Length: 196
Image 1 (cartoon, rainbow, N blue to C red):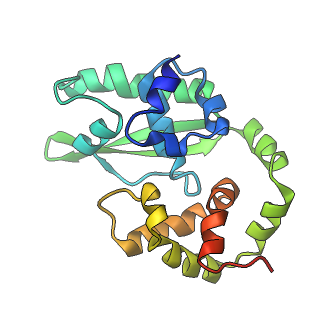
Image 2: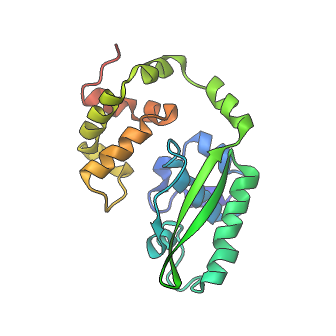
């Protein structure tokens, strides 16, 4: 099965939970799975920053000599991935092209959950963690995000080129999402967060 192969590439296994595997099981394109995973990192805000074209291609696992023409890249990779995510996953996504001069230099994405899935996520929450999650103030979120950004174990969530302050902002956004909060809870405890 394709998904087992994908999880061994580029450290993506850290983002694969059984929840995501269920969401991506119907995808036929390996690029749809990878794009979905990139989007889920920005789940709490519903939009991504601009992915610079070459970096984006490598994040999708596309070789330097594959789909070198933009028309082929969009038709064979990007449009298929977006169509499959919209059809089979719990979100709807659209992308925007960004240009430098006349050529496309990158892409950004905006997405939102499909209505039916909002209710099912609400009912699947662990009541104990949700309670802690709802009690965390914005000030606490930013304070603990700053502490978490300096933890070596959090390196797997870092996006390479971002600074500690940028990483901390992204962690603060992750902590707004109950699933990510649950995932990061052991690290929060490590940096002194205590449940009230």
